[in-house]
Image: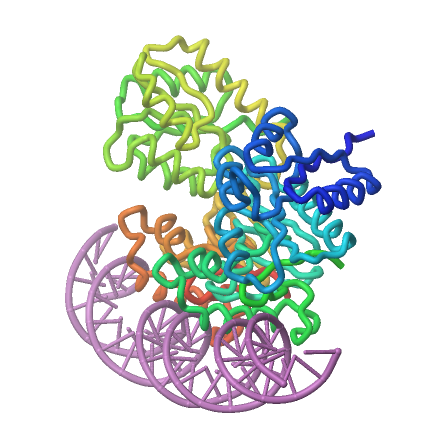
Length: 232
Length: 232
DNA sequence: TAATCTTTACAAACTTTTTATAAATCCTTT
DNA sequence: AAAGGATTTATAAAAAGTTTGTAAAGATTA
C-alpha cells in the first residue's frame, strides 16, 4: 500500500487549525500543524510534506513570505486560505508561488477537493521534462507534432490559442493570474492587455468546450485569472 | 540470403578512405565513399545506407553538421572518426547525433567491432526506417530509384521538390516549421528564405494534389509552417 | 537550350488587435 | 438579506497587420 499524503497546515488560530487537522485526518491524510511561518519552515525541512495549506495572516513570517521561501526550495503545492473579497491578496499569493486558494469561511468539502486536485496534479507531472506529449484528462497535446486532441478529436488552433492551451495544460488545477498568462503567451510587455486574454479564452472555449457558455475546462476565477480543470 | 549491410564512408583524405573501404569490403559490407558532407547527404538520399562512418573535418559541410542533418531525417547509426584526445569535440559529436566515436589512428579491428555493435543494435529496430521505400497513404517514394508515385502514377520532381516531399513523407502528421523545412532542404543558411518555401510548396502542390487550390496533402498551418497529411 | 532555382510583385487568406455592448460578479448601502 | 452601482468578464464583429498563394520574369546550371 502507498503512504498517506502528508499535509502541513499553517494557521495561528487554534480553532481553525483543529478543524483542518481533524477534517484532513479523517480523510486519510497525515497531518501536522504549525502556528507560524518560521515553525512551518522548520517542519517542512524535518518532515518533508506533500502539500501545504496556509493562512495568510500569521505572526513571525506571514503566508506570502512563507510561499516565497518555500518556492525557493520546492515545487510543493501550496493552498492559501484567504478572506472572501480580498482579490488583491489572492493575486499576490499566486504571484508569491501559491497554486490555489480557498476563501474563508470555507466548507471542508471544498478544501478537500482542492487538496485532491493539487495532489493529483503533482502526481501527474512528468518525471523528465523531455516528454513530447502532454496528456491531461480529455486533452492530448503533442508538442512535437504541434497537434491537439480533445476527447479523441483533433482541433486546429492558431498560434496564440495553441500557446495559451499549452500553458493551461502544463498547469492543470493551478490558478493562473491574468498577468501570468499574458506574460507567458504575449510576453512581458503585454501583461496589462486583459482584453487579449478575454478574447482568446473565448475563442479557445468555442473550440474545446462541449458547451462554451458553461465552461468545464477553462474556469474563470473572477478578479484573479483562470484555472484549467481536467475533471469529468 | 540477406543483403549485405551498406556503409557510407565520409572522409576527404583519400588514403584513409581507401583503407576504410577495402577493410570494410573484405568483411562483406557494401561500401560507398563520399569526400565531403554535401555529397554524403546526396549519397545518403540516393543509396539509403545502413550506417555512416564519417570524419569530422571536411570541406563544404563538416561532420558535426552532417550528423545534425542526418538526424533530422533518419535514425541511422553514425560513427564519428576524430583525432585522439579532443574530449570537447567528442561530446559535441554525440550531442549532434553521433552514436559512437573512434579516435584516429585506429585499428581496423576496433572499427569493425564498433560497426558490428551498431548494426546489431539497429537490426532489432522496426524495419520502417531502414526500408528504401517509403509508403505513406497515397504516396510511394523509392529512395533508391529516387522515384515518386502518387495514387499509382509516377510524378517527376526536381531535386528541391523531391527533398521537400521526402521530408514531408518522413514526418507525416507533424507540423514542420518554415525554419525546419528550409534548413532541411536548403541548409542552415537559408532558414529565413520563406519565399523559397512558398514557391516550392506551390509547385509541389500542382504536381501532387488533385485540386491544388484546396490542398489535401500539404496543409498550411498559418504563422507556423506546413503539415503533411495522408488521410483520405 | 532546356531545366531548375531565385527573385519579385500583388491579390487572397488568415490571425491578431481593437472596439463596442451585454452579461456576470462583487461591493456598499439599506 | 436585498438592491443599486461599479467593475470585470463574455461575445461578436470590424479594423489592422501579416502571412500565404500564385504567376511570371530573371539568373543559374548542365
